[in-house]
Length: 189
Image (cartoon, rainbow, N blue to C red; front, side, top):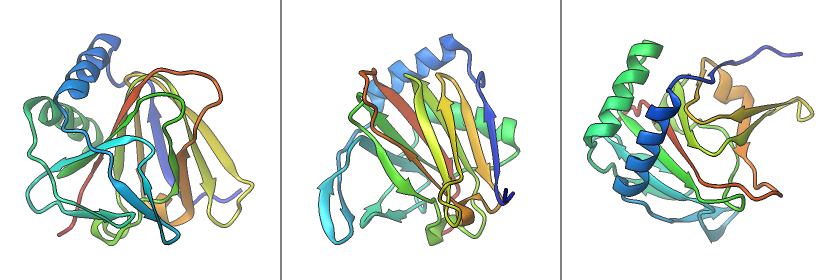
């Protein structure tokens, strides 16, 4: 089995009280959008709500969207600081996704856009409903890993992970409630 990525999962990064606090704040305070994305030459409404926050120069392009960062607010900076102290990494931006129910999803992709640099570090915090995070190897398609991302958990992907692996949050067949996911990144202008 190939070892060509570094993924670390911390199920209790936040206490359930802190996770509920941040979930409530972000649901209300984040300026949510449902952008049109381009896939295989066609335009579709994003299958989830999103928001992009960060430093002024942290402009990010993906799926045909140019994301101009909205300004940080206090609770985002607090969570960013906790993650930076824990991970010994620095981040200048965050993509926030709101999966409203079991129909909302994220398709297969790698976080390998040029603005992220050669071996990007992605720190992903999950709040709310547990959802499956599925990874598959780009060259050994049968090699898959499923991680149930729990409320208050932190997942860190680093090293050459984005070169060799894709990930997704698939639709689910059974009813589930909403989940907010924040993926902290460092954009290189």
